[in-house]
Length: 328
Image (cartoon, rainbow, N blue to C red; front, side, top):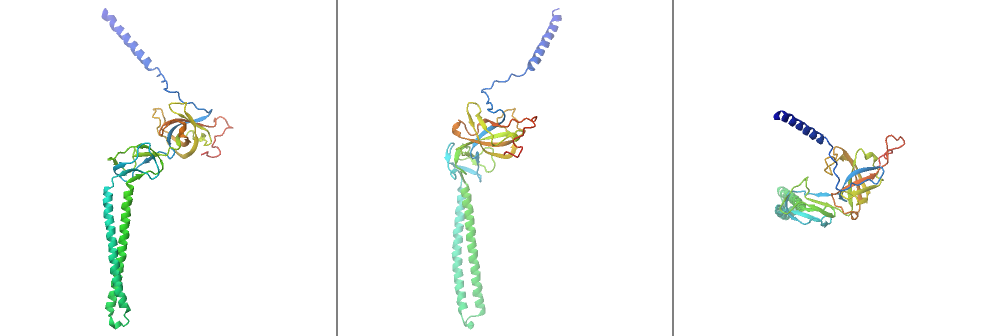
């Protein structure tokens, strides 16, 4: 009798547990409370975009024209450098050995020119003496022709020696250029933002996912704003713009438009959020502001709001800001 009631009871308990599990799993996941309150737009109608801080000169990824072993790194993060300041040196021993050979080749070529000039001078003197004889019976026509030809041959050898000197000088200049390219210099004045090389490491030439060194002019900072292509027609370069520091909306700054890149590009993921759309294209606008107004760093993100015309498709009288031509 006990087994008779136990099995139905277990079945009822199992059914109730399954029903409870299904109901609980179908409940919506509660929204997580944000660590900080997000920024809110100060405009009635606006375009919102994610912005990222970059240097006024853009973030310059320094590379090397030639691959090689790093000999010396002369800068560190935070250093202020002037244009053409050496940043790091590559090992130049092979190039200096080649330079010594080129210098010897040039010295030999110049010595050959000296010999060729003396030979030509001697041949020309003998030819001039033969030409100066008025009595043609004193010198045979064969001897006269031989001296003329000897002068022409030595003249050609002199020209060849001079050409070899030019060739040696060009080869020397090529080696000196290679030697100078082993010194990587700052293209502009700015601040060293990142150093990813150390002495003894191999520096590759060409495109690198991680640059050897990052440099930028931080006198003024730019914020690069991604404007969704669906909102691009609402954008007006004369509109006001405000940026909020991500993580603390109490820090904000008014922006001034620096320029707009009129080429719409595919969007790159900035926030890393799983719900961020990257299957769209964006118009990139760059705004400037004084770095002293915010405690902010290059590469940091900002929430940017750009004032836009309150346009509704149902309003026949309203026109988009670009109705009479692009506002870019």
